[in-house]
Image (tube, rainbow, N blue to C red; front, top):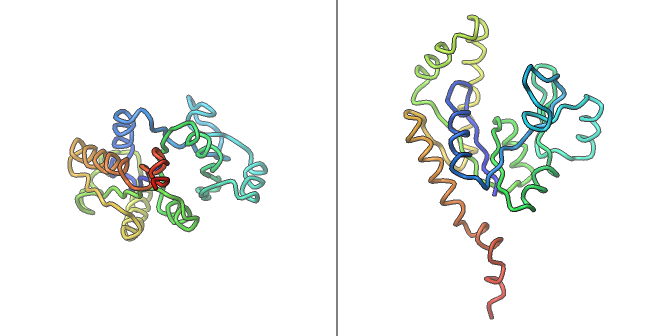
Length: 198
């Protein structure tokens, strides 16, 4: 099973994902490949797979990514073989992914459940971004503009979850994950004999 979770900056997505992973030990968070250099305390193979532009382009040329994007001059991508290896080991994949990545995954007919985390309002999202205190005025305006642009893509997702209360939002996302475990696709993977009944 693949669970794709998206949401604009400041919506609380990272907190929700951390909590969902705690409740689902059979899930693993997807690790992206990137060409950007590691930041202090980042570990190769844990935070990202750090690689060169040349290697990344070779992988891209061999269609090894489910999705990829260029962000601030650096490349980021989700490895298909990495995901498939975990799935063969019986793990499920949780992907923290942007709208652009979701569109690419859907174009490749990737099976999965697509969840978009919404703020209660644009005003509340702006307040949350401002509370971070990490942006100057120009960066804040760009982040808010980008968030509004992402929110316009709500209709490509299976589920929309409003994060007006973190505990309830985690519970809502967990309910979606639990229901997805009982989907026809998941059940037939676990009990293939169902197809063979005479």
